[in-house]
Image (cartoon, rainbow, N blue to C red; front, top):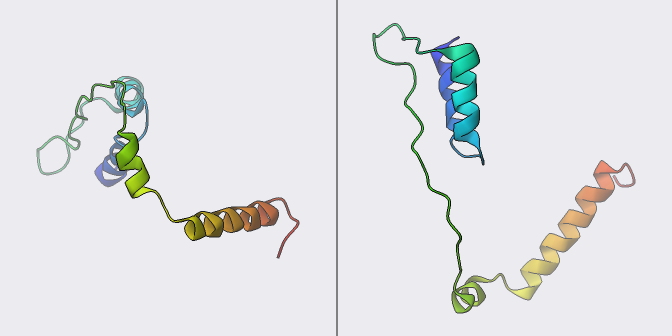
Amino acid sequence: MNWRVKGGIQKVLGHIPFGERLHYELQKRVGGQHRCALGRPAHRPLMHVRVRPVSPDPERLTALAAPPDRWTWWEDRLRRCHARLAGAGP
């Protein structure tokens, strides 16, 4: 596999839930530990990230919340997108 393609896949897998597991399965079934032309590994192993519960601070969430007019803008935009995807809009 082209090392650029492989690197792109690994980068995407590093940002999705269970990407590390999927990366492992792909390596085991398809990839192996191939080396690129420079003699270095064509990939960097994904970092291990521990998943733990998060309790956000309600005051901080309120401080970061979008203003009401922005909420309205997004709701309208999502309605237009849904209509267009459903074939009902321009």
